[in-house]
Length: 181
Ligand SMILES: Cc1cc2nc3c(=O)[nH]c(=O)nc-3n(C[C@H](O)[C@H](O)[C@H](O)COP(=O)(O)O)c2cc1C
Image 1 (tube, helix red, strand yellow):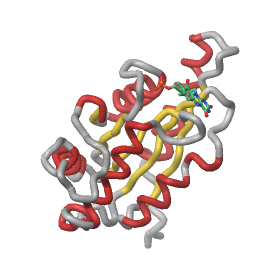
Image 2 (spheres, protein in one colour; image 1 turned 180 degrees about the vertical axis):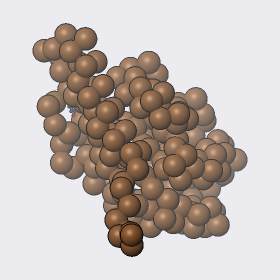
Image 3 (cartoon, helix red, strand yellow; image 1 turned 30 degrees about the vertical axis):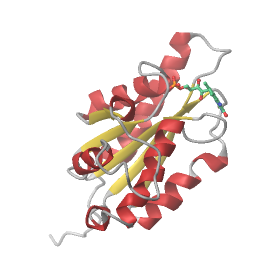
């Protein structure tokens, strides 16, 4: 399944990007950092319709699996990701043609945070928003970067999450169809 990882973080070389890169390298996925583009806040008058938002949407529509990668910042997605999510409203109004094309695509979420577990509320905006677009949820994978652990231990724990995400998202399920011998 061709895959793109859309990263939204305040740290271009930080924990979330490392997590995304490891999974991308393992699976041959492409990575897009939202911060490399000019995406303005949602505007009711759509005066920003010529910024880079539609360009990213057109790019990610080429993929079957879209993975959103965000750190946990104050129990929620990063501001970069939130601006992107707010702009998805454009796909329900001025660019419905593009919005419809997300139907039946798959999506997953990668996140990183300092706490042992992601807060329960973190995943909800992803799921509830993607429901609008009739996309199929494939999982949430969280890498815990503890301030009490060494860097190499955190890296090791992150690699375990990469393994789990790779197995869950990309390993072919055995066929359930029974064969007649
Ligand atoms: C503004 C800010 C808010 C944060 N809030 C949380 C939080 O609510 N829960 C948590 O587990 N970690 C929190 N953290 C820690 C980050 O989620 C963690 O260090 C993450 O791996 C950083 O990813 P990054 O390198 O991509 O920015 C916060 C960090 C920052 C900078």
